[in-house]
Structure formats: C-alpha cells, structure tokens
Image (cartoon, rainbow, N blue to C red; front, top):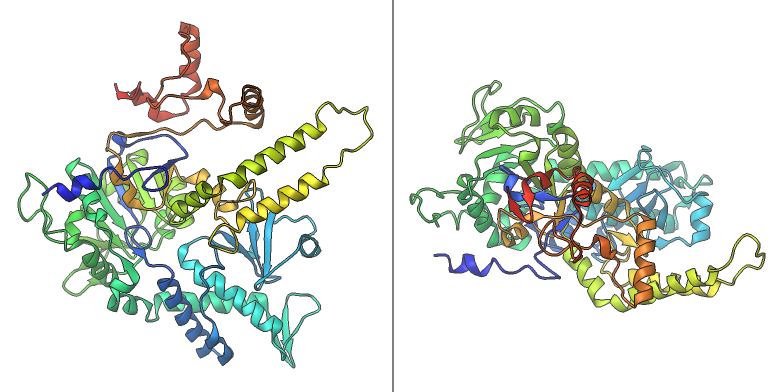
Length: 541
C-alpha cells in the first residue's frame, strides 16, 4: 500500500522539490494547512492554458468591435513574464526593481533603449501605488501581458492609425484610442472570459489537456490528515467548477484509505478537507467579506439566508470572511500555513490581516534555478568584473582628481547581464531579477511569503516536524567583511564564517566554546524569530 508513497519522499535535491525560506517556520507548530485551488492545488498546463485564454479573450475583443485582424494573434510563451507593470498612460510594459527603478521597458514588442526610457521617465523610476500602473502578478495575467503588448504594437504600426502628439494613444480620423481605454477594454474582456465566458466549461471538457494531475497531491493531503492537521480549501471558483476539478484531481485516490482507518475515510475529494469555502472573493474575503452561506450540494447553489451555525466537516460553504472563518474553526494567526499563488489575493492579505504563515507557489522557481546552475560561469565572470571595478578605485581618496577609466569594465558587465537575462525562456528574463538587481515581484515575495516553492506538493518531501531555518540576511557592511575575508583566503563563499551554521538548527561551526555572556547575547539576538522558542539544537523542548 505504501510503496508509491515511500518512493515520493526523497525527491528533494538542489534543482527540484525544494522549499525556500524567507522567515523561519516550524511545521510542528502549524495546526491548519489552507490551500487556494487555481494554480495551487490545480496546476494548469503551459502554454496550452495560456493559448486558450488568449484565443477566448481575442474573441471577446472582436465581439465588442475590435478589428478582425486580431484573429491572427497567437500567444507567444517566450514573451511575457509575471510581475510586469503596465503604464496605462503611455502603453508601456515595465520591469521594475524593488525600489521602483525601471529595469526594462517594452512599448508593444519593442524594447526601449536607455535613452528612450529616460525620454518618457526622466528619473527611470515609478511608484507602484500610482493608479496609472497595473501590476500583472499572476499566471492568469500571462495572456493579458502578451495581448497588451500585441494591441499596442498593432495600433502603433497600423497604416490607418498614427500616434498622438502626447504619445498617450493613437488616432484615425475622428477616432481616438488611448492606451488607457485599450487596457480597460482588455481588462473587461479578460474578466468576462473568466467569469461569464466559456473558459471554465472548455477546461472541464478537456481536463487532461489543460490540467496537470499530480499523484503527489492526494498523498500530501493524506499525510496531513494522518499527522492530525486540519486542512481547508478557500477558492474564488464557484462550486460546480471546484467540484468537477477536484474530483478529477483527487477522486481516483480517495478510494485508498489511510492505514488504520475505515474504508470510507477517503470516499470522495471533500473528505481530504476539513473545511471548504468556494466563491470566497479573495482579497475581499480577508476584509469585510460577503454573506456566508451553505451550499446545497444537490443543486450546487447556496441555501437562502446567512449561515450562523458551526462549520461542519464535509459540507461546502460560500462567501464569508476570514475573521468569521477563523472564529468558527478555532484558528489563531500563526496556527495557519496558507498556500497560494496570488501574491496579493492569497499571500499579502492573509499575512497582513491575520498574521497567517504563508507559502507562495511560484511555478518559475525550478526553471529559474536551473538557469542559474547552467550559467554559473557567467555569474562568476560578473563577480570578477565587480571585484575588478572595486580594485580600480581602491587607494583613491578626495585628493585624487584623475578619474579611472571604468567604462570598459561597465560595458563588459552590461553585456554579461544581457547575456544572462537571455538565458531565461522569457524575453523579459527572470521573474526575480535583472542582472544584480531584484525585481519588484521578488521584493514582494521576500516580504510577504514565509516560504516559497514551485509547487505546493514540495511539502511532501519534508517531515511535519521540520524546522525551516531562514539564512542570515546580510547588510552591505556585513557582506563586505565577508567578501574581504574570503578573497584574502581564496574562498568564494558569500556568508561570513561567524554567521555560518551547521545543518543542525542553532549550532555554529566555530570550535571555540562560547562564554555564558556570549550565549546570552546570541539568545537575545534571535528573539525576533518566534519559532526559535520551541527549538533548541533542532529538537522541540
């Protein structure tokens, strides 16, 4: 019975199956595991699903009067990446770093030069909070990112249209099309396809074509129940779609009962979960929410009136809000680890509103990591050039008036950074960085996601007593001390010897026995990490 189970427990290696840690987290303290469904429990096949989304959105645009020539639009999986900003004023797609500095700018499919970027954005900087920018953070946004570039390119290059003097759109005769209205139409078409169109039905009619069926998923949920954890599902999808999709993913495995339980224990997908909420309307769910109702499973529609009783295992509910939900199931803040793919709707809001621990699913992680491994030589060359640049200015102070010629080194660095970005499948490079600079998406992931991985099923590779230890985060002055020591000794590690730890949590590699006062200072220095309260030398007190 457990043969398949056992073979799936040892797939964690350097390039796949891993979970990465932003903030330390002790799984032993987690009492509730919560999951989103779309792109979390249910992984959609790429590029097939994006191609379907593109086709249906184009059909909707044609139905509201857009040119029939748009039928020629075919999704290009090598163009879009997540985390891009769309400037609704000037029609540009922007890749932005954690401080709002522009890393790359696309107008349609044209990549602007640095001079062209400064012509539109003199400071090469944007503010994410400004309403003119729409952030395309989710995997559902990939067709939208492509089509926004396609529409801008189509109208800018069409012989019947000319660019407005303000550069904020195009015109033809007495017709004016601003980039803002273009974006509004596209947003409306995308929402219509997902909420009122045929996309869900086409998906359900072709589940094998569009949905990945991962055999590890039922095993993971099963192990959670065996380890006496509560499991819940909170999805924005309606009951009918959720029911059919989860049946496809879990019902085949629901006939395999856990050891020592009755034969009916896992007799349907709902029995993998203690609590199920559909039509949650996240992120609204994490605020004021909507009316909580129970689903009549015979009809698939909500029962009338507001549900006020105790949530029952095996029943399905719709709406509500997170505060009400936590009260009903008896969950408090850090008792919950919530797993989702939407950095705003799932991760940021649940973290801010209730202090839930968070696990961000970033499908691109494994791909990104493989590129890093395969192109380590480029990174080493860039590091060597940065050291050469530092050396060029070493020994100079305010007395020196001659300026060292750094241009050749900077040009080499620029070319290497471009070569490195070109190694990624997307023309826009990595979702996490450009050259040595982290993206806005990476900053959000680091700030709000305690853990992140390419799949929720990576959890199956870790025991439920596992302590996820975050690595020390170095300030520039700490890194400089480390780098100086490593260069002097010929080592290439990026972590100071004083901060390195052995694989056992809490132990250090230094052989010198610390004094009692040192031990006290060390204990005090880690009190910010609340999970350390339960762990000493890797064991629970």
